[in-house]
Amino acid sequence: MSVRDVIRLLRTPVTLVVLLVVLGYGAWWGYKAVLTVPVSTANACVSQPVTQLTPDKVTVRVLNGGNIKGYATEVAKALKARGYNISVVSNTQETITTPVIVGGSVDLPAMKLVASNFPGATLRADNRNDGTVDVLVGEKTDKTMPATGFATAVPVPNGNACLPKSAVSSATPSGSPTTKAS
Image (tube, rainbow, N blue to C red; front, top):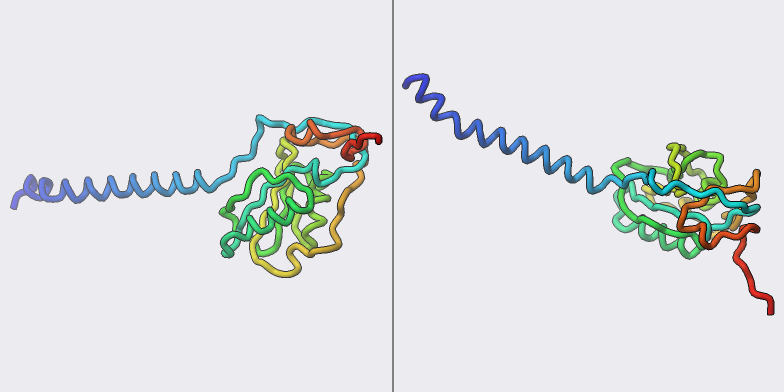
């Protein structure tokens, strides 16, 4: 058997292996791209005068980082019942054991308000500018999101809060919904 015969014999299997590696990498890259929730930089928040920040002015994304299927949906429904605006319910690649609250800065009133729903949660800043808050959940326990003891409003120290554009249309200077005089 000559070198030419060996090359001819190995050409097809080697080509197939290279193509399988390229296909596998493309599948892995696509899978990661679908599961990654992008942080919006085009939708920067709008500073609004408010003295109290209430849940109806906060937009939340709930991401599941645990093994319990549907847990993010369950948490999102509970937050929606408490008045929060839910924009995304999805998964995260990060493995979560205790709740993590992620936002532009740990000092933001929106972060503090959302964190009051999750005692013992870790607060993390990622310098986003869209005014949203992410809730990353993992293990399901009775202590994750208690039925009582959460804040229904937090004071805004400087009188201005950076609200997502979706919440701006309903914002009022007092930070509470407008009421009609009877």
